[in-house]
Length: 195
Image 1 (tube, helix red, strand yellow):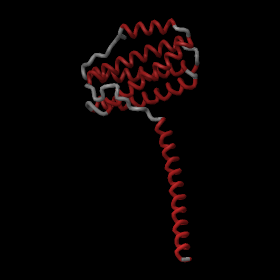
Image 2 (image 1 turned 120 degrees about the vertical axis):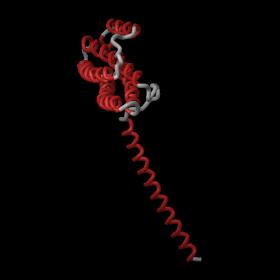
Image 3 (image 1 turned 90 degrees about the horizontal axis):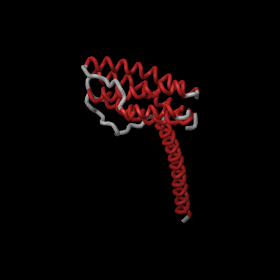
Image 4 (image 1 turned 45 degrees about the vertical axis):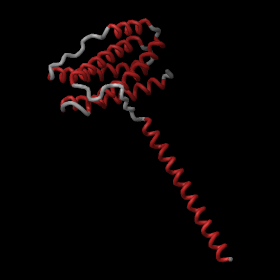
């Protein structure tokens, strides 16, 4: 009888030790999952709002128009914004989008595709409204638009980076690095100035 009790106690002790080990493992796994989740928060989400793998002509047209719109918005921000963070961000956008647009023009010319040269009436009207806004309202609206537009732009470029011919893929992959950086900076400025 003593032997059975000692054996039962030993077995119970082993089970408790195993349970304690499992809890530690679960805590470690939970911590790892939390770290992974935090790291993924810095990654740019991949939305499906844009037709990924769209044709070359469609991509070049959409990318050209997006670039034109971002340039016009950022030039207006350079004139109108007073917050140094917004002004510096707009300066970076003008510089980066000018470079991307120059490379896109070369790609478009090689494929005999014409880039959009003017904004659509609705976007021109929107720019006119933005010019009339008070500075604080403009800065808030500008940064919000940039963050929102970049999610779509990134998805457009990701689609081109995985489809189409080599020149198109190379252009898109090269531009993606800059666009991802711009998105992170836009999000940072947007959050820092409390908009």
